[in-house]
Image (cartoon, one colour):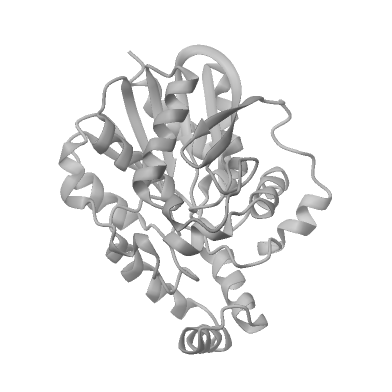
Amino acid sequence: MIQFTRRSALIGASAMAACSPRAPAEQPREGRIAVPGGEVVWRRFGDGTKTPLLAIHGGPGAPSDYLEPLAALGNERSVYLWDQLGCGRSDKPTGDPSLWQIPRFVEEMHAVRTALGLERLHILGQSWGTMLAVEYLLAKGLDGVKSVTLAGPVMSASRYVSDVRPMINELSAEHQSAIAVAEATGNYESPEYVAATEAFYALHLARHPTPETAVLWERTFAGLGQESYVAMNGPSEFSFSGSLMSYERVSELPRLTLPVLYLSGEYDTCTPDAAREYAAATPDAEVVVIPGAGHATTIDAPNETNAAVRTFIEAHDA
């Protein structure tokens, strides 16, 4: 999950984007789908004949741009992305808190899958997208779903918070103080707090984007959906106070009786140890850790991420 109140010049992405080409080069096909609350925009990369992949972005409210490196899988299968309601290219309704609830997002995903005609598919969720993927499978069933990849998985909010809080200690004393002051005063817009969160992002979200993926990271932050993020996550990654703060699904993981890949970056906020814990509770699961990567492995290590996903979903195409 990503703290969305910050400006987009994280980890030097703006400077890198200025001298980098748009990535990927292929222009996707796209369209609009009516969902509860408005319309969302989907994009399709590639038209390979194998079982398609539907990817679910994180946030809530981070549009799908940072997942575009998955388009490289389009030489074998269609790769579908969509921007969830409230962010990116999709409609951005405001003032209706009922829109930012898990059941509505499940119905949104169901509408997207139905409209795209994805009777058989692989699913990949990233960060908040792992929550939505699991909620969708628990609510709608596993029929036609060949596999699910949970990248940067959050199956327990309490586990996530307990893993993230110690990471603050890796920051400078000044940054730690700024976070403490913001939490005490409720002022999350101070320059000191912005600097502290940017330092945290550089360690655990996107550590070393390539020139091409830096463009996608910049575009992701340009399309952020603030309202859904604040409602569901809270003001920051360190003050987890939104509706997702009570999210706990480890006890439900035995119901995922399909192949599951838990994928984590070495320095992920959703830690490799958490991924292993979730895998141990899942009947048919494996774990891949991407060395050197943070939470957004498609930004830090797109080739390694694609290789892991490709190997996994190819094994379950039949």
